[in-house]
Length: 359
Image (cartoon, rainbow, N blue to C red; front, side, top):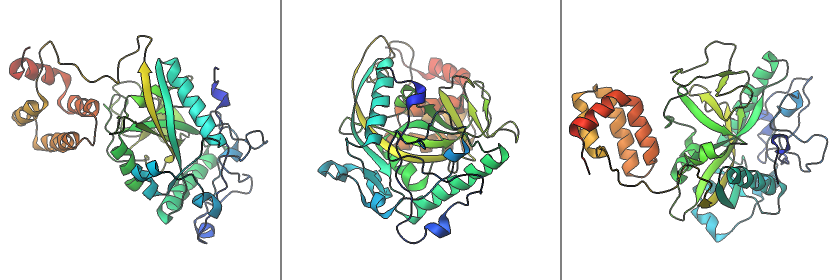
């Protein structure tokens, strides 16, 4: 079944606080904006949110989880292995409409790119802690500020973010940190649109059980601008813009600048899944790296040789990333992209030819 972009809708959970703090934390709602929950309990209700076309100001206001919602969820022995449970995430059952919608969308979109996927579990943000509600509160304040500036349209979308199990746990505990992407589209967090999860699949890493994990986040885009490869931007080009996209009409990638990454991105679901097969001639991004047959240089050797060519600050940054890589906190792909970003391809190729090995 072909799932069209307009069909990705998620039923909501009620969002009232369970500790009496909701009134104090509740983002203010302008009188002209009707407050609704971001996911409706029944997808056929008139208030169902269309997450691809958030042009209605009613789609933007936020509430907090109810006592029943924070405490509800499916528990299993496998959940003891999920570090995000300590961050207030609760498992939703496979009979839940949200589970079915997310699963159907992810599996279908990956299938269209040649990947056979099987969703194992989905956990949602229960907003059960003070910090999680504070983050939601902050997201709501910025959302309403952009609405006010943009005649009621905050342009909130859903997007995927892939990382290792440890990386996702760190994000849920502390927020987004230094982006580990290659910086081609500027310095920010790269998320892939709902229709193109394969972009985030490449950033995910299989854990000890062979599971991959991706965040499904609400993203406050506001007024996005097109970011061309190699832009080197750290922030919007002017105060007119809020975020970036690779293409205005058919985006595959959202860029949220580092200055806004923890106020304009709200992780709502952790989706854990397996890749069963890869076919149709698509890039074998899931295969283990093969031994090179051309000029190459061991990563440890490269790091030791770089102080001769780079300033101390750059060496310190690379050494920290190298340590994270050796501890399997970041992927090899992320480490290589960071090296290319700091060193530059021209110097890197020169060093490989000068210091590298041949097989």
